[in-house]
Each structure stands twice: as structure tokens, then as C-alpha cells.
Image (tube, rainbow, N blue to C red; front, side, top):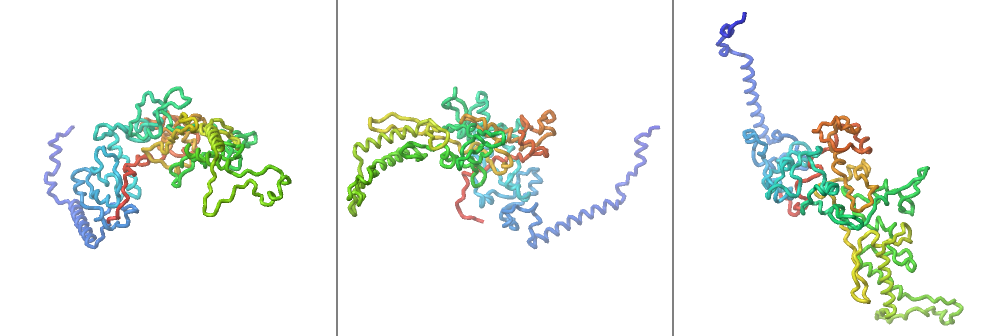
Length: 528
């Protein structure tokens, strides 16, 4: 039989709330005295000058110099304001306190929000560990770069939407690689984009049509320099001749030419004297000046060197080719038959060229310049005749007169010093990998215009989260949210990644910086 609600309610005592509850009362008094005791303890600690109790955690190492002087950074008390407003935008640190010591440059003048409207503490959060202050979370970057806008509207220079690095649609490929792969469907970069300092759309001698390529105006073939052959016993029988005139396999020695700088971050520029001169001497007159080469300098310096060399050759005293027994006794005694007269003390006696000698020097200089500009090249040794045209583009000019030497110019090499100018990179942490693991296709590159920097897929091979089975090339088990690259890692990376399911960090700060280091202000006294 089912009971009605009236019958069920009659079983409940309507005065139950008036009856004393010892457990509830005890809990209430404990909470009250705990709160009062906490306030009394905080007040006592404050009166004793122990302010560490208010800190959320230890400060970073650079700030431990004044970790007990909170007033140096904190100007207001905002916990209650943050609690009431349900917002994390309220901070107890004024930017003026930060710029007292850290005079850093702004990001972009046309950014939204403006640099002055962003709190330093919004990105650089203290009391959160040693790295939190210098390595802010990516969410601060994504807050603006999800829909990048400027004071003039959407950004025309950079990608308008970037959400995460290890996702196919979260970060675009590097513009250098995108333009060189498929320039037909990609708009050219804005004039302010750093890609214009590394690549250019032009037609190099030998190209059938203009294309986006390395803007360096120089001829270089990686495939020739990296070619090596071994016999059945594993002995190197073909390669480039290096020091001590021995064969060198440069395919496993990229650092022979690409030397790291003192920080190990970037690579030093290629220098002719250190890397090229031994195999490519700029000989000009091996018969009269064996082994001597013109300097690797501008045409004016080369011409001056040749003029001085041939002038001194003409003015040099000529030795007598006749046998000693045909000379007169007087000539054998003083041995000054062909020597120039001794100048008077206090007077400078300049030797002057006759018209015949000047014409000889002019002809020799002209012929030597033509040899220096030639393209012919014998691979090794002092018999090499490779000249300026072997690597450079030479622009000859017409003669100004019958007796003048033609002016000629070397087209500026324009070799980029930085490829990804909007990012930062450090080679030292990547030395556990071979160079070709990232710079794929170098050994097959025969054109100077080839852009050999790695694509973003190569970077994602390490800087990503790996789904199960992806390392073996099984991409069917990878969900779309994991952001797996378009292709599996190379064989050299599989061994490295075979025992992990997470890769290197993918935060924005790993490759990008907010403050422009070129605008940093280092002058001025330290004002505490």
C-alpha cells in the first residue's frame, strides 16, 4: 500500500531546527577561533617585520637581492579587488617599478593593445618558480595572435591567426619555405617582413624563369663539396683536399666551413681566407709569380696590388747573366755593375718609369685582371686558374679611353646573415642531431638559390606531443588534436624519439620574443 505525502510528513518533527546540535556548534566555534587566531598571527608577524608570509612563493634568483623589501615592487594591495572582479588583470605592481631596472624596448608601435597598456606582471609572474618570470605562458601570446589586429586593421606583415605550434593549422609554415615551394598560391611578403632579407624573386643566370630563391649573388654547389667516394676497404679515395693536401670528406664535417660563433647560437659568415683560399687560390701570373694570388678584395684593391707588383718587378735590378770569368777585375771586385746609384744623404731618389716600362706595366696589369676575372678552373693545386667569375657575378664596363683600364665590378654577394629574422634559434642544444637531420637535401643541392633551412614539419618532429604509433610512421592512430606533422620523422630522429611520447617544449617563447632587443636602453644609472 502506497503512503501519501501527508502521512510521510507527519513523521517529521517540525521543531527539529530548534533542537541543539552539538556537532554543528563545535564546528562553528572552531572556525571562528581559527579565523581569529589566523588574524592575530598575521598581525604579530607583520609587527615583527616578517613579511615572507604574504608571498605566494620564492622570488626568482635575480630578485633575491631585495626579496624581503616587498615595497620595492608592490605598490597596492589587490587580492580583494581581484576576488570581487573575478579577473586576473588586477596587479599590485606598477610598470614604473619594473622599468626602473628593466629598460626594455617595445614590441610594435601599431599593436593592439598598446605596449603601455599591458602590465608587465600580466606575462612575467613572480613567485611562480625560477623560469616563470622569463618564460611566460603561451596563453599571453595567443590572446592577441588568435586574431592579430593593428591600429590600421588586420596585420599585413604576420600571420593573422596562430594558436599553437604543434598543430597543423595552429601555426603556418615558415614563409621562406612556403614561397619557394608554391609561390603561385602564396602572396608575396609585405615589404617589412624579414623574409625579404633572405630570399628574393629574380632570375639567376641559368634559370629558365624568375623564382623565389636565396638572394645571395654567388655561385656555390653543395653537392660538389660534399661528394666523397670510398673503396672496398673503406678508404677515402675522392673528396675535397683539405689541410696537409689530404682528402677530406666534408659530407660528415659541415663544421669545417660552418663554424659556430662564440655563443654557439649562430654560425660565422663564410670567409674566403679561412674556407676557400686553400682550394681556390686566385692566381694571376704563375710563371713570373709562382704561387702568388691577388687579394680577395674589391677591384680597386686588386688593381692596386697588381700595379704595385708589376711596377716593382720592372724596377727590380737585373742580375747579370754573363759568366763571372767574362767580367773585368774591377766589376768582379765591387759587384755593382747593375745596381742603381746610391742616393745622396738627406735626399729621396724616386725611381721613375719610362714610357716603355709604364706601357709594359699597363699591359701586364690588364692581362692579369683578365686572368683574375676568368671562369676557368682546375680543381686543385697551384695550377688552379679559377678567378672571380668562378664564384661571383662580374659586371664589366666599357673602356673610357684607349689607354685606360676597363672598370669592372663585383656584384654584391648579398648572402643573408639571418634566415628567420623574426625568431630566435640556438644551434648548441641541437648538436645531438646531425646537420642533415634538419637540413635535408644538402648533399643533392646544386643551385645556389636552394633554400636549405628546415621546414616547420622538421621542427615538429621534436617540438610536439607524439601520438601512439606515430614514430613508426603509423599516422592512422593519431587524432587530429595532437597536431602530428605531415610526415613521420626521419630515420635519424626515430632512434632519439623511440622511448618518449612527449617532445621538446612548444611554447611561443622558445622561438619568439616580445620585447625588441634592438630598442633596449642600456645607458643610465641604476636607480633603486
